[in-house]
Length: 411
Image (cartoon, rainbow, N blue to C red; front, side, top):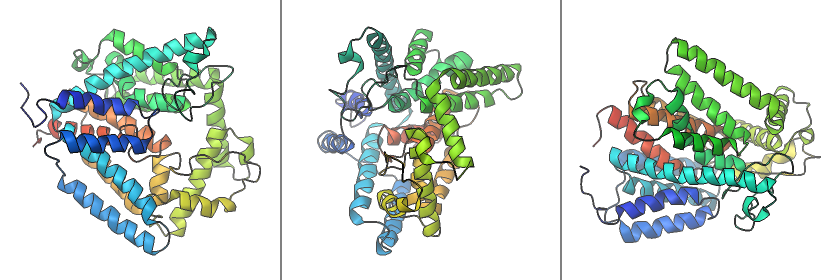
């Protein structure tokens, strides 16, 4: 039986709302989600807990920000906006998810919402070929959603783009794959059924997201590493490579983005204007992040400062024929944003965090969830540059709780 907490009456509702806010991030702007979280904290929480490690992190960030502001590399407005979002999101999820039981409840609710989104992704595929635009084209509901492609339809559901839909589905897609391929898949028997797993994976594939496929590839690597020279490790490796090659050869967008990105990385003379928009965006932000890092001697520009660095260094890049300039605010990649804004300090923090809480490979449910979170984190580092949207702080809290539970050290 679970311990009675200060949320004994309203907590189930809060828990559902907390997960729902992750799934509504495509419809509701981050600022409004933060406002909702503040209201819920004020009216529903009797006690807000802040860990000493989080306080220490904030003090370091404030000190770093102060130095960058004094050096003229950052502004108080941009820094406070990011710090406020991180603090509110952390306090909101930390107050609701305090132990392993809470984390399990969150994941179960998350799975149910993921199934709904996966089913809707499949419905959108049918609607596209049936020419029912009100279902497959939700620009009337989701502000800023990309227009549907004319050839292969990529399901975005209620998110701004297919890759965001894939990111939201990735945690449960990992669990679905683990149910079929994982070494300790019996641990998931009570968490997810094969029917649910198939629905989630089909919905995930329906996004036709290049970033999403990379996320799955990362997850398969972690599953593969569990076997340790077992014949199944060879089978999973072959199947993983085969799936990657099928996606590379059969899905034009995936092939184009891989080729263009590698070409731009390997050849500085390659024109940015000749590449697809996704490759343009990631390479431009990569070059700007590196310039910010080098120009600050590894200090970084300060949290929230990437837009300043973007405007400062974009003129130094060969972008005369580039039409679109996306992700000025978040660098298109959390890793690039950390390099640009937090420099060596941020990189050391990420490495230290992952090293401290890296999950064991002992086949427990906690270690499986840990690997699920790691897969999610790696995709965010590669592709998504926001510090607190899409439930990032929720998964960080779940990740830490599961590691401490596996160590038998949950307070």
